[in-house]
Amino acid sequence: MAAVLVFAVFLIGIAVSIPIGVSMILGSVAPIELMHKGGSIVQLLNNTFSGANSTPILAVPLFILGGVIMAKGGISRKLFNFFAYFAGRFTGGLPCAVILTCLFYGAISGSGPATTAAVGAMCVPFLTDLGYDKTWSAGLIAVAGGLGVIIPPSIPFVLYSLATGVSTGDLFLGGVFPGILIGVALMVYAVYYCVKKGEDKDKIKERMSELSSRGLVNLFKDSFWALLCPVIVLGGIYTGFTTPTEAATVSVFYAILVSLFIYKSMKFSELLPMLCESVKTYGGLAFVLAFATAFGRVLSLTRATKVVESFILGNFTSAFSVLTVLTIIFFLLGMVMDTGPAIIILAPILLPACVKLGVDPVHLGVVLVCCLSIGLATPPFGLDLFVAGNIAEKQPMDVAKKAFPFIVSFTIALFMIVYIPWLSTYLPGLLK
Image (cartoon, rainbow, N blue to C red; front, side, top):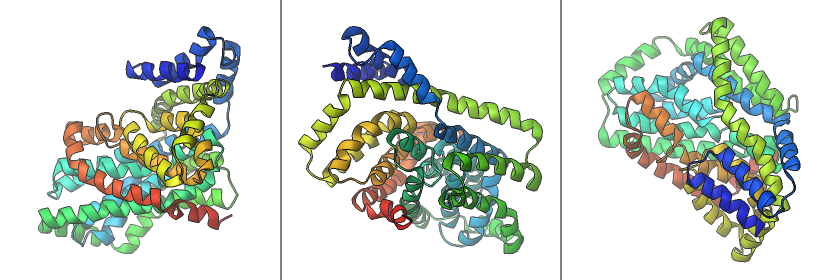
């Protein structure tokens, strides 16, 4: 009964638009005050502080800060020019270059909205000037921006690791093939759209001539430091030279050095506003993370996790069946809840039962993050829709309509990821 009360109060709080962090507090306090179960208020406060007092959690704000600095430093433009040089000559090549830029920028920022904002601010006007529909371009960016939370380093993977104890490095590796597969699926539709609707070949040829005149060597030199960032960050993690938190710190200093002294696209005076922007971005999530630990402890003391585990084991008999249902649930959940809170709250509850049914912990993490990343581009509350709509000066629902075919392509790739665990588990297993 206490477990039911926790979930009931939490869900009612969300339903009446109470912030998720506050809803977790209410759900945690309810069994303590009303039924004298779930520990005490003092234990709740201690668990809250212990949840915030964690070294690995520092990776989240640091990756956010690194992404903000690189966005302001114009890194996305240099990446796009490099990819456009090779892809722009083909039908649908420039939209594909945008998707490739999102893939690679995701390996810098670790955030979907950050990728959408950084790449979209440059690519939406660029594609519009070349004759592509502005709303369609925004829809492309809104969906492709979700790759930022799948390609390592990924903030949701860090949160999943914190919540479940699964290796962050294994999760980062597990996201590589799925991220590439989703990127390819999006590019297939982009090419199909361009073949069907046509392109302004004269404008594209003119712009590509300008780009080609700079020469491949000069373009590579210009984009080299941007391309090197994920190599340094991920290389440090997988060689054992740095932990994920230390790698996030390296990414911040690398972004500052490149933007200030190599590209000279930023001034010292701009650093403080960027720090403020990162704090604002992380502030709400930090509040949720702190209380998520206390909330999880109350769930454990009220045996809520055992209730969920018994339900799953009593109604599902295979890994594929439970993954199918969870895929649908998290796909819908992503429409109304941000990725971070959903992972922190639900992953530790679901993981024990899924493991008993034969689901690999890394595979489960990849599937959940992929499902929630689609939610970033789906109405009514997909954050990337609002970011892309703001860039294109279009209503989010108008952007969502143009994004729908991309979402379908993403979903097809998602089910391939769900039913082919090898895509998530091969690289982590290879390096063990």
